[in-house]
Length: 139
Image (tube, rainbow, N blue to C red; front, side, top):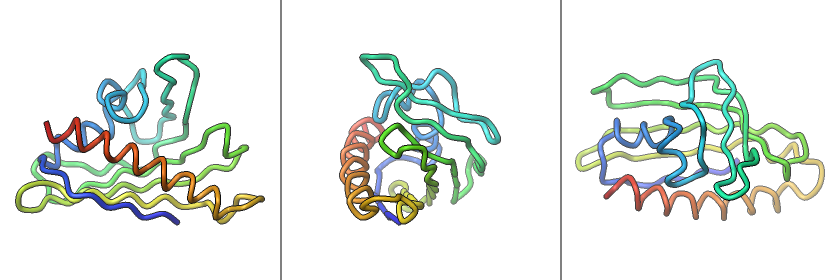
């Protein structure tokens, strides 16, 4: 399991929008054609190619405007995972001055070959995406 935590100087509702709204996902992750919806499939696409990059199904969306905590959970896969579905759980916590965002990305231990290398690769990728998220959400 990977665990990534970042403090963002932005309100929880703003951060939530960048995690779940199709038009905002493309500003830090990859473009999506639709917003995420509980119980629905989601897909993000290559900005240049337009081909699917990552996809899965949203299993939980717990957000109320003004609440101190929100949770987003979805399955996550892409071609390099060779059919393995992993699980991403995002927890947002409102704190003085912003939001603490934590990602728990589960499932790499089930990868048949070199699960640590696959987890390390995703760890590096999430670092890059978190840096991009910080740039757009804190502006």
